Image (cartoon, rainbow, N blue to C red; front, side, top):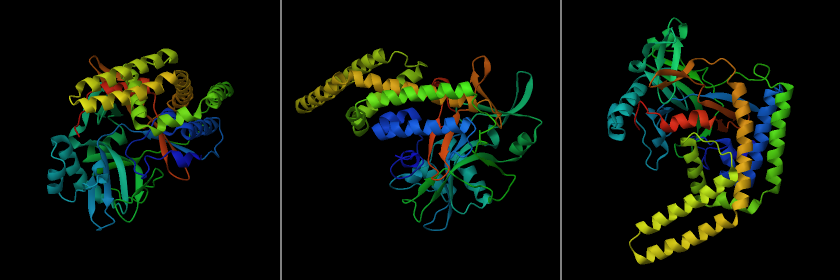
Length: 409
């Protein structure tokens, strides 16, 4: 399976949720695992200085909310929207009244009205998706470690720009800021297809909107692996490949085909992320998973009052638990494969983090500000424009699960 065939947001080509590359083992079984290994090999080659690789890397900005904007191909009207654009009854906003009806939540309501007023000035002819970084009132002047900054916190990360820089001045002059990362094409809203290869050079400049794309400078020749690092990541990926060859393909594909089992495993894994725990002992992790699933199913059975429904759920539990207990060794192997992919991924992330970013990034704590890396990166197929996210989950995703947000959906 080619990289471009599996790194899609969903079967309909909408950019609703980027997946972690290691989760492709669970999401798509054998084909997802094979493609994830091949993809990390391509990123390794890029960082080893092979510029002919067909992969681009973009910075994952931690903005919120997600904003869709441009021209509705069905009526030629300018609009703004959230991810509700892909609802069965699409929520497109052409006027402030539309926003009041579709998005009454105070914080989101105000931000979308700013977007509706100023984004049309960019002259967008198609449809773009971006992350809103700030509106006028979100910018603050703060001193961090003795330096004066203009700061804004759209979601988890606090972004900081030196106060005397041209970048800070352009942000302060703007009514809003947005980072575009996806473009859409299609004759109807329902048929829209996403591409992560975007070009914003044709947009009209206006001081009212600070905007940019998410493209990261090609890492080849700038942040490169040493010979020893290249050998190290190659060893990691070779080990993953050996584990993959020994894994039972029927078990891998059973997980991806069963929404119940898939959700169980991903939910349980995320409990470890929330706790900031790496999965080091995969045998113990597998035992904990099986016990957790059984306790969850028992709780669901106890909550049911009708006897027929209770019996049905009991039968479902018996079948599900049979799968987990009969395949404990294979589940351990799958977690070992995921761990190997994470180890290789984190080597790539740490190398990319060595490059200087547009802004400084911090996490807000009770004691002030803690320096942090960017949320992560998005790797994009140069030909097809599909993408997957590269995030150090123990560093950023843990903070994302536990941090308070400055806006509401």
